[in-house]
Image (cartoon, rainbow, N blue to C red; front, side, top):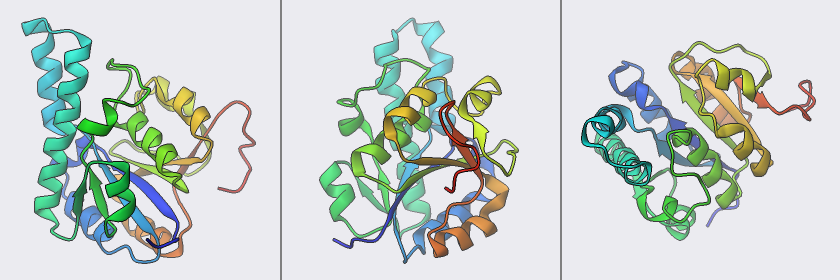
Amino acid sequence: MSSAPLWVVKLGGSLWRAPELRRWLEILAAARRLRVVLVPGGGPFADAVRDAQPALGFGDRAAHRMALLAMEQYGTALVDLEPRLTPARSLADLRGRPSPTVWMPLPLAEDADVAESWDVTSDSLAVWLAGALGATCAVLVKSAPLPDAAVPVSELVTEGVVDPALPERLARYGGAVWCVSRDDHRRFAKALDQSNPCGTRLTLPSDDPNADG
């Protein structure tokens, strides 16, 4: 396959009702200068799992598996909305199929070294996947407003923008992780074409916030 740089891009489930969703899919599907793996959020399907858990009383292990299925449901919808996207389930498929691909996470994420709890969302799974694939960076597309600067990941955890497991996952990844607001798709399209990430760079305490990303 191509030796072009690889980006893992997570489309937040909160975009499911956003008018920008189709534009994001068009931009990602048109990527040519680098390879893209799209990680779907859970959207309304994950919300249904959250609502059902206290009523039915199933445990976190079952909830984790159901949340992965929610990501697959959202991913299935995204592939249907944008036919240029190709679903993929294994690392071999993600590496070998023509870009861009959409990760269907159930088989692979069940074997990932992540906690089976609500502290882990598609944010941390996207960064885990970026590490497994040796991706240049991971980009988390969010509905929340974001500063256009480097920000400690712990700050975004406190604000509820990213999941609580992300700081540890970021430290283990070792690559760059960025957040981009959903309404910043035009700038992201240029960044994608130039292979130069934009948005909010997430940092750890040991990071130099002025380091190039």
